[in-house]
Length: 181
Image 1 (cartoon, rainbow, N blue to C red):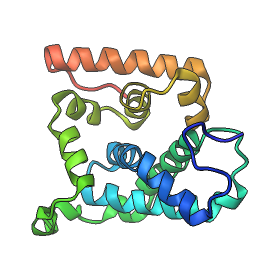
Image 2: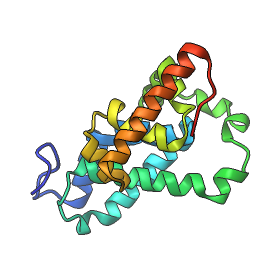
Image 3: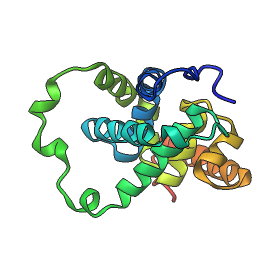
C-alpha cells in the first residue's frame, strides 16, 4: 500500500524523490524551522532530510504514508541536530551571514510568511515538546494518532502536551506570562 497522493510504483527512486520534494518540501522546511528557528539552517536540514529519504527509499515498507514517514525523518533529524555540539556551541549564522540571506527563494518566502505570523512567533517560544505537538497538530493538520506515531509517544501524552501548550500560549499572549516547560 502506498500514498494515495504519493509517487507511483513504477517510478525510479529519483522520480519518487522529486515527487516527494514537490509535495512535501514546504512541510519539511516548516517543521525544521520550528526546531532551529533560522531560515538557512532549516533549508540545510530540509536538504539533509531528503538525502536521507532518497537513501532509504528502497527500505520504505509502506506501513505508513510517505508524508508520515517524512515527518518522522524530519523530527528525528531535527532533534538530533538540536542536541548536537555544533548547534549548541557555534555562533548563530544569522549574526554572521545576514547579507547572504537577501537572496529570495520560494522556500525563504514560505518561512518568512510563517515568521511574520504573531502566533507562530509565540509558538516558537515554547519548549520543544510543546512546540512540536502544536506545529504537527495545528500547522500540519495531523491527527493526534499521527502526531503520537511520529513522536513515538502515547496519544494521551500528545493530548496533555497540546493542552499545556494551548494554556501556556493563552497565558503568555493575554498576560505576558513566562513559558512553562
